[in-house]
Length: 301
Image (cartoon, rainbow, N blue to C red; front, side):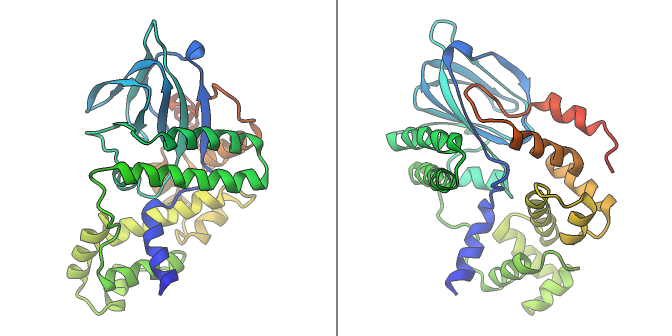
């Protein structure tokens, strides 16, 4: 039972560990980034100085030491340092199964994308995380991952809106989540899932969405795409990944992958290869919209 509960709680923040970025930007080299979009979610942790941030559909925000602000994946953003007191910051990029739900749990929404952290341990932990991932050793990577989740835990702890309930407590939905986690690669229908918990299809779908925020089919597709992202870092082909994750059709896989990741599976695979070969050093930002827009123009499939 304890393992099952852990698997359920893990799903809303299923991070792709092959797609984590950490870096540091000095004030003297900080630039005005205008009308940009990112292929993954990014948090910026301001350690000194001042600046501004703009999120499309949300507005303008002042940032200063202790500010942590969220750059949502795929959203138009701009950020800039003050001319006479530019800000220095660590940036942390992650890809996660349900980004909006995850970041809401740790305090960020598109209506509230900037937090002023009160716990100094958050900035200390991000600095340690940066050092750990720069070392690129097995021990430092394990230590870095522990710091990563510590940061998320500290942010969630200071979040006044944090509910502490990630999936609800419906036994039927929990059973289906466990089943999907172990069988996502198989052919699955909503009717089968409803039969699994002895429910009417319509009632089951309504209950599932109430507890997860997604329809059963959308949850299954997102789960498959998340697993595919993890597989694409290896030597397997796109066709093999499509079959192994239950899509069976390379074309169908490509359509769903582009819709969620904003790039083709092959472009994503090349993207991971370039990142894995590039040393981590200060001032290196994650790829911008220009990079993956160019990749998306190629007919990879």
